[in-house]
Amino acid sequence: MKIAVDAMGGDHAPKVVVEAVMNAVAAFNDVEFTLVGNEEQIRHYLTNDTRVTIIHTDEVIENTDAPVAAVRRKKNSSLVLTVKEVKEGKADACISAGNTGALMTAGLLIVGRIKGIERPALSPIMPTLDGQGFLLLDVGANMDAKAEHLLQYAIMGSVYMQKVRQVAQPRIGLLNVGTEEGKGTELTKQTFSLLEESSVNFIGNVEARDLLSGVADVVVCDGFSGNLVLKSMEGTALSFMNVLKEELTSTFFNKLAAGMLKESFKKIKKQMSYSEYGGAGLFGLQAPVIKAHGSSDSTAVFNAIRQAREMVKESVVQTIESEVSTS
Image 1 (spheres, rainbow, N blue to C red):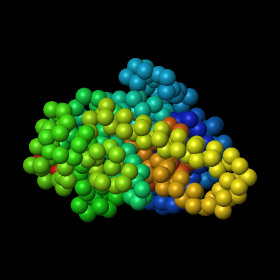
Image 2: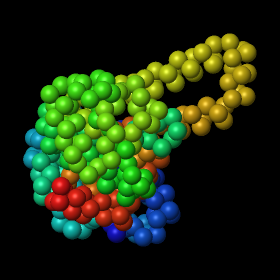
Image 3: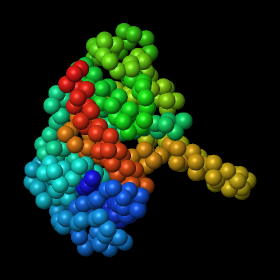
Image 4: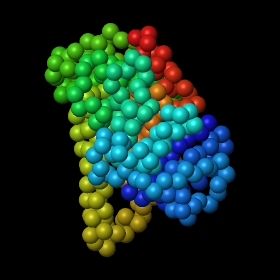
């Protein structure tokens, strides 16, 4: 298979992107890579060109660019050319850590939706205390959603967790303000009824406070609510680590204790880090399109590559298409 990677996307590109691809070349002998971006900068970090092709371009979509306008104006940007590799059948999947809105726009306009999917969903794996993680759909692709869209999110999420995360019967939860049936907005009430009648393993409403405990394998919600959950969890984790660091370095005895527990703290940080779970899949498109976090390090990009590879190997897109057509 071949995976196209936007070498210029993200805060630390192209260094961490190329490093991740080098690690992936060593780890996966069944994958070829196309790196899209400034060839001179890419080659500066390239240590092995085995199964690696470079498409040169100087044009880049910045995070400050308006997504739709940027995709239409900057047709030779690294992000747009990366997505075009998939559209033209030259790559099976693509990855970018660049402008989120631009990647979603390019995915919709260039790759296109699966037949029957009304609205794609931006869907990251979020950390849990047991290290298994849960899939959150949607975190911002669609701020306004209908109950039918959330049902499709549940179907897509269930397929992904079965095929890629190897969860036999994924538990599907509906994000709500209470666990009781009948709680929430008109949207959640309608969605609850649709999910109850569907073939997915629906466990009912789930509250935001229980997400980290792994109450569900897949959590569905509208993009506005999902984005609030995403940003709240990211902010809380970052603030907690900063407070902990300040406290552990505040006195000599605290520093001594911190030194003794250093390995334990590393394990906790790794367990709760987004970089260990891959990127956010733009589910509902005709090919895997993965959005890596803008501040991704090489580990995060590598795991996004691993995620894309598994989606291709397990025919996730084709399975979603089949499930949607029969639902």
